[in-house]
Image (tube, rainbow, N blue to C red):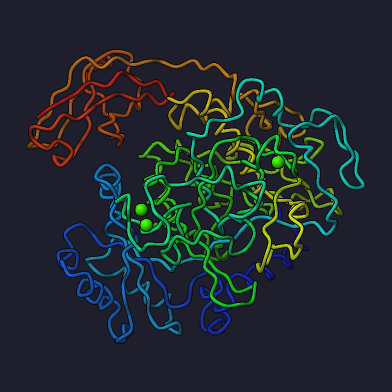
Length: 584
Ligand SMILES: [Ca+2]
Ligand SMILES: [Ca+2]
Ligand SMILES: [Ca+2]
């Protein structure tokens, strides 16, 4: 593990700025520096008596009473799943047990680690964990003129005081000869919100066509009131303006408007859907925070709203002394749901110089098939190092755990205006731009390229999109020790990449309802094939030596009698069979 000394300063700054509330009880327990005071995420086991209680308030009370004496009159348990997801999405959530996850809110002075330990010993409880905090991964250089759009096309332009290397760029211009991105592709930006009034972003912000703003009614019946330009899962309303200024930086990289004679150009002209999970709790710009529970909710909303790509330029703020204990299981459940739903999830290696081969950073380290993990590279195709110490590494990396690198140093992007920590006070919109550095930025580049690739190949699953991006990289010697194969993102490489895939054929399906076993018969099925029922993939187990029969455990609820259900096969390499309709 390599770490930066001077980053300690940054870490302290972030902890203080993100979690000022935590200072109240910081002396009590180390956990309070890393988790929301008094908050615990608890997942009940299937069949727990509390889940049977129909009345929401009574159920909340019953669950909070699991904390015993520590649950005073104000204690409550909020369901992790918000709104009322559609049947298809709800199936995924139920399959993952997300409907059994609750956020327990106790007195802020509660000794959280003691309660967590008690809850873990109860029969009803599957897991319990502190509600850890989330941290952003952008650094702002001091020099406002530092940034350029070198990352898109670099003929060797100077970047600030530095010389850059020609062709150390992602070849965006060549990809744009093929596609600039379809407006039908939605990138969910799970972040701090977006400056919705920014003239270089306004055209490419997603608008929900079925929702009437500000009438307090869920017009499109998706379970979320007034979700016009995405949703604010932290405050449970339609306000997706930028609470911090971070999301606006991401939005500009991904989809700033091209050829409008102002500012910059994003990688794609697809639609960015802000899913805000950062909360402001006071007038001072430093008063914001975010928790694992709300990050998980942002992922669930992204699934519900039909995004095909999720940008996650953030990581959990884990206590380095307790890392092995801190898998953030509720976040893992939510990421698994994004995998079930076939949404590509772009994750970052973080800004703390950790080697992810040895240190776990979440969500990157869940390492599910729909996740792609990125580290930050600079304008010479080098790994991102601090300017004043070329022996240190600043980005997270991993020669066998990080898929690729993408530009993350001193790039020009859009800046939010108004009253927020990373906001500009300028009134002239032509000055609403900033230079930004960090693996967050690298994540945004990958999301933009993913949107271009999806626009070119609309039927691609998350796995196929990920493969085109990973196999379309430019291999560099300079990055070889830091990311798998030494690859740096290439937009033209991803968009033009042809894949070798094995297309399975599904010939016959039988279902044994009593044992909940679905048998599939066909050809071309690989080890690890998934049987996809509706949208959910179930792992297939081989039933014959010649690989022509597999079995998956699928609950009866998937097959309402008399209803036609589509079933298909998906090989681990991304090859999918034609779907056949099955009726029980
Ligand atoms: Ca709605
Ligand atoms: Ca409405
Ligand atoms: Ca522009």
